[in-house]
Length: 335
Figure 1 (cartoon, rainbow, N blue to C red):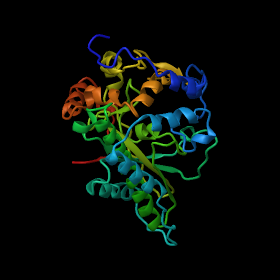
Figure 2 (tube, helix red, strand yellow):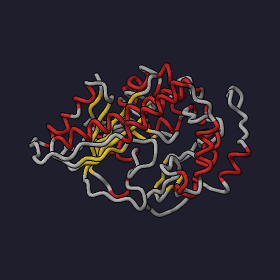
Figure 3 (cartoon, rainbow, N blue to C red):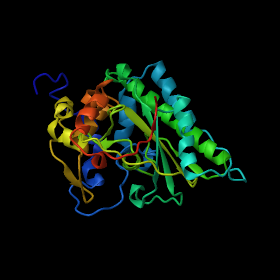
């Protein structure tokens, strides 16, 4: 398309050869008419154990990170590997609503910018994973837009990594707090594949709606945020799901479609594991994603992501809907 500086895009032949016929679309269940649990498609913690491991390793070896990026990655790894304290013998008693309200402390401290709580659902577990912890605490870490907008250059990529660092540190901090209060808690840190999908519980607990580009959109941060989570048996009250008319907005908007270098974002929803949803073509996306060590062009280009735009858009869309359609609750967020 004229005006897109990253087109035409021709995938690197070496990377394609390393994929050796691997199709993330097939793994994701594109076109499958029946529901099933998700399978790991990328971000394998153990690259030696998966069919696409050599291609994922190429992702890391192809780039040339500077010292700051290496330090950020080392910090994330340190956070991921940091041990959690044992569960205290005595449980602190609070009302479910007070437990949820207590999460605001992590927003106030700057550990994260948004929190929410959802009851665990079996379909959020990756295939072959299990948990008996009934609650998911979701954490949102907002990008610095002035840094993010430089993607896919390294400067923008650093902010992506920076927010994953914060996500890991915040998840460990929340889990440690809950264990100190006498409840079991396990951190889900990302971006590596863990026990659960992160986007579905984030949507369920009020973080926003799924956008055409496959990421969540909300008025506060647009698409410019990352996720972390904690699985726990602490008795939180769930936070309410929210909608803003973003789904309809995306059906009319083509900004991310036009911005995507490999044409991986389409105009229509598709069936994925029995559900009609917005879906990004993995097999078109991943070669460019790998070559640029993360891309993120679609979330930076999203109109909702620009500072100050999302709340105004939400206000305009809200005038077209009833209070019932909008939803009455909201998860914790920064002032």
